[in-house]
Image 1 (cartoon, rainbow, N blue to C red):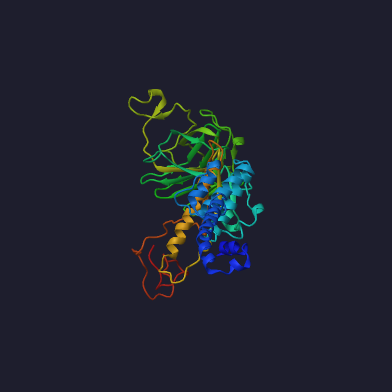
Image 2 (tube, rainbow, N blue to C red; image 1 turned 135 degrees about the horizontal axis):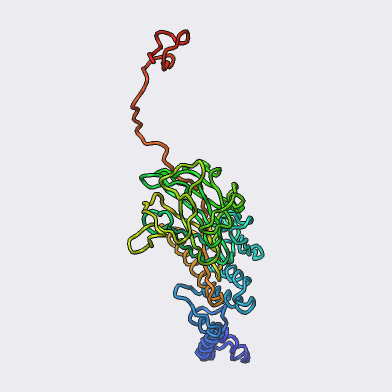
Length: 453
């Protein structure tokens, strides 16, 4: 015992070697050593990075008002406090640097705690973290490629301010859309957007020359053909601001027209029509929309379309709802209409981490629970990062942290080509070398292969 040796070293040599005196000094020496251990434990409990109990670390972090979460171990809690403290005091809490530093430091701390080997190569370099693409709709961010896909392909983390969210709406909520039907679209994004349409023909007579008009922006898209029953017509917007048409996998852009500067009740001129159709814009806020089939030269549909551009007062006739001189005989719906557009969310940001490969150590003699624990730790890391970023963000700002899994997506649409089994109602004779002629002509067809006209 170190204390007993120190006490004996202070005595003369005659007393130092005596067994009786050594035994008498053993009791106070043991008490002093126990006292030294208590002092060391008290000292250790006053240092956040050396304490052995989580409740002692929580008491030390109380000055920062950072309590331990129920699922956190002592190692996770240390990383949690350090990351939140540095993000608040060194980087200003609500800044982009604070968010990126927190995710980086806590991700590394979670890894050091032995939970998961999470993004070791990525989180080592904080300078490669920030990546804010342009808002959707512009040439730098085509609608067909999401920021999450770009982050996964590049293998780098992503911090996206005002992330785009795709909205869908069916007009009306049930059933088909009637001619002259008016409806509104509430575009709540931070910026303007462009909209795509999907029209599906209903059983019965086809829809003829459908026109979709945005009264708010004065734009229209007109399809100069009929939409047969069961066929699907896609009117899409591209990244360059153009519009395309596709009818069941066949390009029909040549029959699509866009019109600008529309005023209801006033016919448009040739100068307003664009044979290279432009995408329809949605203004921020309420957009008044209008659907009607309208006549065009050399396009059939006499029993369906209107022969002139109506005004907004003209509606389908309904008893006790429409006035006599502003109503037409009722026409049943001939198509379904669906719309889709991107909105840039205001006061919002998203942090994305490419997590296609996250390593977890498998202990020896494992009973098959390693995978379950690894998945649980992965979910815990995602929840912790989301909660930490939520504490750092400014008031009234929405945030999200997502672990982006590796995925390989090949988008495709199905369409009906044929119905099996095929039933052949008529067929030619078997074994003939040539096709049978349709009629007989003197000095042209042979006698054996000729028919009377």
